[in-house]
Image 1 (cartoon, rainbow, N blue to C red):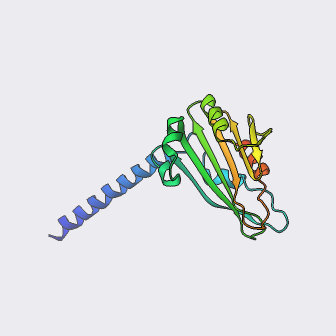
Image 2: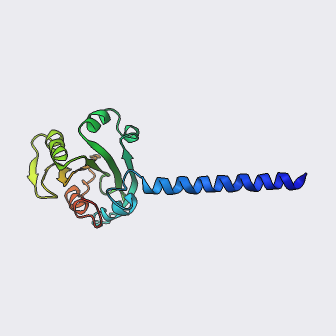
Image 3: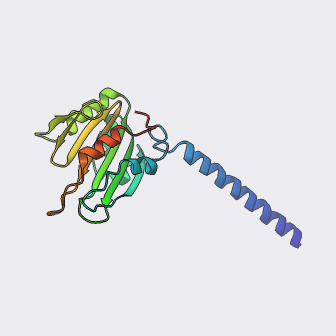
Length: 184
């Protein structure tokens, strides 16, 4: 009686193992950022600004969202972005462990066309922002840089915190625009 129970247990574990391997392969091949960067966390580490004044910038969070999961990140407004052509959204939060600079949020939206990304740029740019030469063109205003690069809309924004210095949003934006291996 013991042999059949052991055989069934081995068979069950083998099937479970094969199922888990198949799910892993599927997730890696079809992840939300698969068409943008090879690894969201690796790309985000390349976006860290140079340390200055004793700062120690690190990636706090880095995640990619698709049209079905973007609602986890955005509390309202996700439907409008999807209607405007959003396919994927990469969200990264950078912080300074020394506390000398503010945290910084980076969002890279992959739209269906460059024209749709550019239309979103004009819709989302801050009022009174001035033009900046980053990517294929963008705008900046007090700790915020928003620009397009191909069919991608990139937003870099710092979070004001009292008298803490703003993180260098323009430097971070240039590094995002020049991400090695990115498909933009």
